[in-house]
Amino acid sequence: MTIHAHPDDEASKGAPTVARYHDQGAKTVLVCCTGGEAGSILNPAMDSDENRKRLSEIRMGELEQSRRIIGYDAVELLGYRDSGMKGAEENNDPRSFARADGGEAMEKLFALFDRYRPQVVIAYDDESDWYPHPDHQRVHELTTKAFRRAAELGKVFAPKKLYYSVFSRGRIEASHQAFLDRGLKSPFDERFLNRRARDGDITTRIPVNGYGQVRLDALRAHRTQIDPESPFWFGLGDEVASELYPFDEYILAAVNENGAVHSWPFRGPGPLKSQLVPQQLPEADLFSGIG
Ligand SMILES: [Zn+2]
Image (cartoon, rainbow, N blue to C red; front, side, top):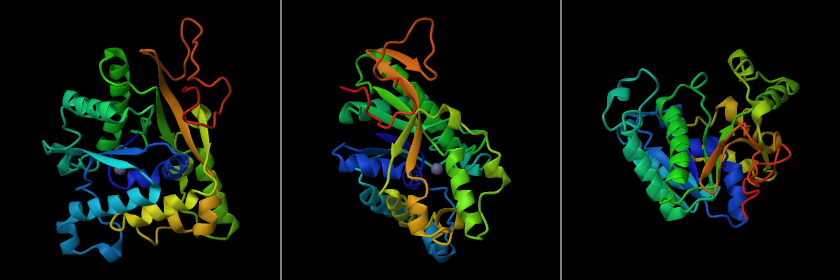
């Protein structure tokens, strides 16, 4: 089960991982917390008054197309409204995810845990210093709390592992270098190259050879949100971009060992005996240690 803030986040973050596990027989569920109503239309070819009026309907269609491309078995909408970027007027909308009652949002997530019984949940790291979108921050906080509470309560189905997806410095540098090698202008500027890196904290590298195209196709399905001319995603061409960095990277944020939650970096007063925590880093399987 992956928890995402907006339609299109499931395409940009970890799509090849989901496609690979789905091919291997895992049941895959996408939880999308908002309808993306406050997104800007970033593709000039789609930017019309009519499209802006029915943006939320269009985005649901885009999400369905992306779902099929990636291979999610189910999509669940948590039903909140997009809060917009930090400081936007939409922040104050009582229906917004940013304003949502924390207890109510957690109950909704618990109901989905009970329905799908996910062994592994994937959400976001705290990236407020880099991309301070209130909805992304909320995904981080809500999922982290819900994972712990579910384990403690005992009456809700409690997932075994919580991961955060990471857009690593390694990935940024590999892409940046590929642009330079081809004499192209790199879209990765100082802001990217100087951002706080969590590469040293990565616990998990999933090989996704052969699945890189899934990300590009899923991104293109979000026609209003992703400019097909975007150098960031498409500037290297599909062939190069899809095979350039054939890993998706994650931090194992917490494990639930029979109701006791241990959080990264898994140091404690005593030795932690859990098969869920890899002995050697990085591990290459999100389901390692789950019987
Ligand atoms: Zn988003």
